[in-house]
Length: 410
Ligand SMILES: *Cc1c(COP(=O)(O)O)cnc(C)c1O
Image (cartoon, rainbow, N blue to C red; front, side, top):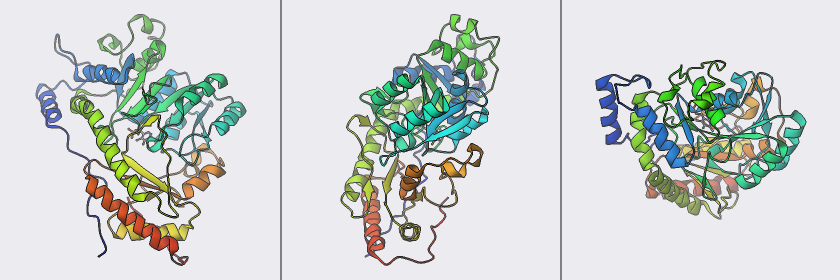
């Protein structure tokens, strides 16, 4: 019998009842704007920031409108200007180079390794060649590089690090929360990330000057004194009259939905890891399929799963994707000619100029990607692994297909 999977790869868990009740409360009183508070009231947004700072250990936290906004705000807060080179991973998602380009700055892509993390040798070469002062480090698909080695290298190179933690909220490297190594950590609360308010973002930092600028940039007018996870008024003195307001605030409705989810984050990380390990075990040792290495220092969040089909032709990968899709398993491919849904590649971002990353090209040509929503059970993950394994064996050992193109999965 041919097994088929019937679950949805895009269905997240519902908002916790506690979050729904808190959101209804905010709608009843109507004070959705973060600075619109009754006497003595502390806004949901302010409490959310305090709670996320406590969760990561960071001194300061700012909640904003999206992850992309958080990254743009972090770049501005570090003084990046039009024309500046900003380093980033050759394998990342469109909002990352987009945040750099939105400032008129120039994304400079750095090669990634077979384990999908930044290639340190290429980082050093590109940093020296371009004089870039900032690295927008993307922990793409939750793969964390050796952060101790990276921070030492960046200190040597005179490069400041902003972390894109859209896929690592809840992850750690050597016990240190992802986002707390760099000057600023940026997170996303968009529906497909680890907590869900539809849209939303955080910045964390221990640097009072950077955070004061970020708070002003986010559109705090002269109400920054209402923030309880921000530096004191002295940090704002020098910058309050010279920092532009680039509005991108979080509101109390979304903060109300998020607060109970932060309390569930550690449990979600455990549940994601269990699902990831079932997939990994089910695909271990399959000829032609390469798993991604996961170092012991990395506590990752398995909200997605990647594997490589190294040296497979485009036709063979297209056939494999069609066959797995026909059995209900939706896989994405980073090697497709055309960008599909969320899956675009550095050479699709024409505004960044023609950059050439042969090593990353080789890796992405065989890189398969899958969402793992928490609505999947462990049995679902075991079934998905069996389907992938069978199809890798059938297509990998079959004749070279002709004229097969990959299916378009949105
Ligand atoms: C989602 C995402 C972002 C940006 O988040 P938005 O909240 O959608 O703006 C940044 N980087 C990566 C890798 C992402 O997946």
